[in-house]
Image (cartoon, rainbow, N blue to C red):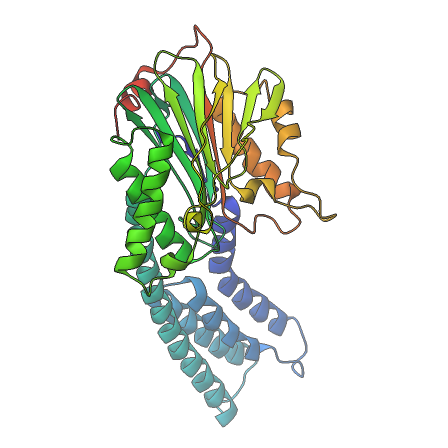
Length: 383
């Protein structure tokens, strides 16, 4: 299973769909009963036209036609019960029902074609997601990975936040980043940086070399496609290296929010004495990348996150208290934290989640912690 958490549609959508399918019949029954139980001067059969119109929203073409025919039959039955003679008014009423039924069937057909197109696009989006943002393994080397990823765009699976974790010779290397802005341009930039990371991660001498490769990759793409939106965007990135045989973590920040290191109930930011500029802005200032090294021991957890997490605001305009929340969740298993964080962020935000959100928890299990054999096997190789 991938080490990730994404919001999924709940039962509310299915309930609304089932209600929509029942609504045309409810209109038929209520109209029929109301017309029968009121005086002849109060006629309600005109509301029967609502039944096929409502059916077009959820029913197939045949279903919509069938409901329209039921409405026409109900109109004739009401006329027979009331001993109405065959008049132009009755014929006109049936004609109106027939026209509305045919129009509703056309709307239903158009809706079904649109839904089929959307399903195909969704299938393409899933393939793109697997290529651009591949699922992370639950375990990689000695470490457990737990991911929260939510795109800000409605129904989108990919946004401007990006991540990757790879087992290389002698270490595990992790990247988390955030592209300036939103939309397809941000996704394009993220895909370029992910491609550059994957191409260089095995050969890069250290994190500084890897950061330079990211810069070069985006600059090269901008030269190839000068009209591309990606050439104008910058991205903040944090890189992490966890070497084999040493209980340390090496980190390099390119303008990215500082990760949080949790040791027991204690939580503190990783301090960067000289963070680098964001990727694609390095030309504004000549500097060397500085790598920070911190202890990372069994039982410790390192949380990487984007500003979609830390800059979520409540109604009073206060930022989300991530450090405080993480302290309160010290006893929670790492696998539970993505879902807990997602629920808490959604409740805290005054407008919900209005930015891409990515948070990656890298956990170093305490000695004696058991792992599921299948998950361990799935996460030990290079990707």
